[in-house]
Image (cartoon, each protein chain N blue to C red):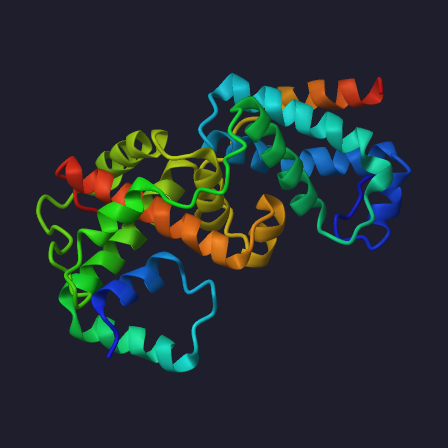
Length: 193
Length: 75
């Protein structure tokens, strides 16, 4: 039997641990969960293990699911906490980030570019993807997740804020930091996207 | 008139704190006039594309799905 994920009764069926509802949720969201875990920087096996653990927790907490948020939001939230546990990176609210200072140094006192973005050596396609992957390695997992939810999964900002438990301002800061981090990293490799 | 610094910040953080419409229009106008900021915005867009390219393919999860459903059944 199939279960429609937009079924208004889905929350109740999840709470009742109805096998067909659980199967539908696993089938629908497992690929996204694995992809997000990979996006956060986990290796393939790590990502699969953590996806597995995410669904086990999902089942254990099924009776508390009130259906007030989307199933996906809830699952991604569980995933986020698991990744932070694994990485032991319950990042304290980072007031400063090295990228902030770097960005300061790019503007003069009037707020105009003192070192404008480089225009040399444009690269495309595979080359840029590979260099970007290298640059992503150094980024904090929470920033990476914010970025992947936005750019790869295309989630709305409200949903990302719920998943990562941050304010809209915090999310803006995280996206600002990772985008500049990646841009600076690529430019330092002499690659301009 | 917005500065390059304000414009690049608005672009990179996606105006998430919700800019006023005046400022939003200011960003657009600035981008029309400033080639450095235009380049910056195009580079950020290209980086977004590169990351989408990296994770575009859905991972193969059939056997993982089976093993997850197995362990859920036992719970």
